Structures are given as C-alpha cells and as structure tokens.
Image 1 (tube, rainbow, N blue to C red):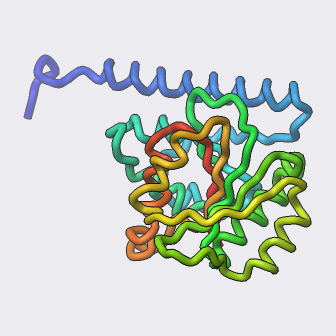
Image 2: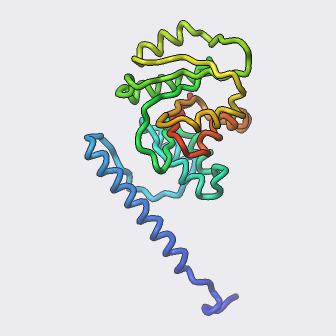
Image 3: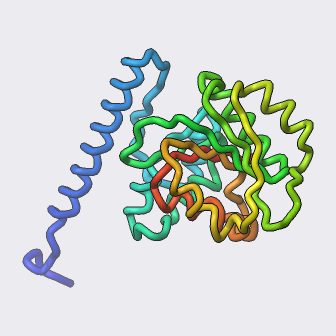
Length: 229
C-alpha cells in the first residue's frame, strides 16, 4: 500500500497522449485538405481505437488503398528494422498498401516485380485498376533470378497483358539474387515506384519473402505498392 505522495504522476503520460491525439488530428486535417484540393472523394473515421491487427483487417476490408509512412513505422523502434505494427499491417491488410517515404514528392517510372506467380500479376492488376492515370509512365517489368538464361515465365501472355495497360513498358531479367542485391540496385534509381506482390501472411511465407521486400522498405527511398491475394 502506498500513500499519495509515493505514487508516480500520470501527467507525463497524459501529455504524451494529448500530443499523440493532436498529431493524428493534424494529419487528418491535412489529408482532408489535400483530397479536397484534388477533388478526391474520401471518408474520415473519428474512432480512436488502439492498434490491432483485427482493426487493420476490418478497416482495410472496406477500403481501396491504405497509404502509410514506412519511415514512421520504423522510427517507433529501430530505423533498421520494422516493428510489429508494420508487419501486421502488411500481412493483415485486405486491400493494397502504398508505403511512402516521408520526403516523397512524385515518381516518373514504374517497376513491377515479377516472378511468374499469381501474386505478382495480382499486384500489377491492382495497381493498374487503382491508378490508370499512370499508364503513360515509363514502366519496366523486372524478373530477377540468378541464372544465365534470359527467359521469363509466360513472356507472351505477360507482354500481351502489360501492353494493354501501359504505353511504354519494357521487360528485363536481372541476373542476381534478389534477396541480397535488389535493394542496392533500386536504391540508385530516381523517382521510381516499385509494385510488389505478397509480403507473406504466415510466418513461414513471411520469412521467405522478407529479404526481398523488407530491405527495399527499410531504405525509405522509394514508394512501394504491395498487394497480396
């Protein structure tokens, strides 16, 4: 049992919570202003529920796109590693997620990560459906595999589909291990956006995917669009 004089004050905690609420309110106001300026329909929710993967799944189920700052997610714990909230958001979201650097301005070229899987085509389709206004941008489909062959999976069907949606699109094969070298390769590019498939929902598939997607996100250099089935 303690006397009142020995109890820790809750004032610092309350000040932190008040500041957090104000930051959220400021961000909502800025988001609304920018949408109105560009004639974008939007809806803001007034809820103040604590983070949970169930909330992320439910809210995203009724959304077309989640926009998030990867840099802010990382800053919560360690600039070198994403925290649990980002992991859960990427795995549990039921709509595509766009992760943006804090100093993001615009992009002028699209890269589509392709491995022949339905997930990689699903990501391309979702981006095409949501952002048809970018169909004239310079675009490149990237197939990455450390082998001598220059072949891509299903090249004729891939080129036919991509060519229906993008006016200026190329197809490249990068001959290195994606998990080890892709993040460094794309880090040298300027004003690009990467479109990628599944981040992995189960712990096993997540560990298989993390070396590719996570290293790119961790650099905070480029926006990345992630969509999974």
